[in-house]
Length: 106
Picture: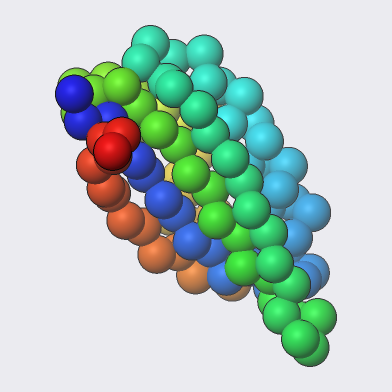
């Protein structure tokens, strides 16, 4: 069976790093309780100038169905809490690149 891997790459200005990481931890704490979540990791690298951080978040889901259900659940939770992630990212000057992969052992 193919697992689904969500990889988000964020370019985060240093001045937005702390609030970004706090919000990321809140979301990660929630998604790891959802059905079908396998594992997740956060990787961080500061650029040579120290003015920006690259942060990768990786979440692995058992199936595409589990991943789609998680997206809906997180979206509904955001709506209930009045959170607009795209707007928050924009306001903090963060750039996001998202990729979705399948994963299988070999």
